[in-house]
Length: 340
Image (cartoon, helix red, strand yellow):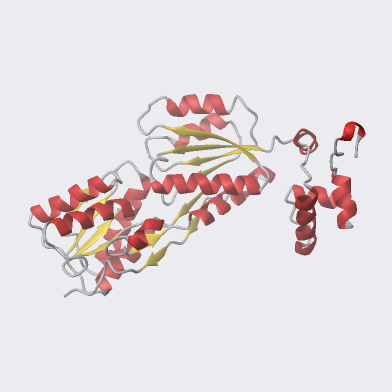
């Protein structure tokens, strides 16, 4: 015990002695250096937890010439996808030893991006991640403002040459369309998300590509705003317009929930009369009535890979090599069935 009865602060030397390794090895573990053997890293991390060792961030920053702080700029987090991206990016950043400064931008606030950048970069940050889901929030403006700070774009335009990590929503759209086609459906309508969202555009392009490969054109295309209410209204318009369709591709699970409700309200059975697919695989989607066939996005992998890419850029600005794609996964449930 230290004088006055207070416990002595555990140091890095204490961890090194307990683990039977050098001070430098403990430092490498804390700083995520790749040269440490996995079994050594696991032993050191276990002792850090047991001894309740807390690194001196100020000393660590001075030694590494880093702030160990990242900026995360996001938009549209009231919706499931962007919120999951933000949660998983922040989790991955903290696992990597970084603090996070977060700015959430309004969807239609023209000056929000500029003011957020001014606020965030009044702090010293080692790098930044921008959840660039909405085209109105210009990624080019962010890049210009950063003045060389390492930046990774998340959920940006499909095919972008900027350092970015996205889930391959084009492939997900193709997979959903092919699923309905393989079930024998030929009259297929679309309910798309908002036109200014990259994901909505890319999913639509994937659907259309999948249908085109089978020689099919969409029976009708409607738009929504990601909400169940907009899905209900869009499906109602499709039915009320007299469009003949036995399959419905919907831009996200929330709109699919509304669409299923609208179909049932008009006396149509799902999937008996109309098969419905969603996109996202929200936790609730397995409990829809009927459980929803959807395209699952791996948001955890998005956070991990986005963080790993940014750490590469922080260590070596020349490591940038364009866009990295994470494959989605089709989850088949009871909302789709073979055409009657």
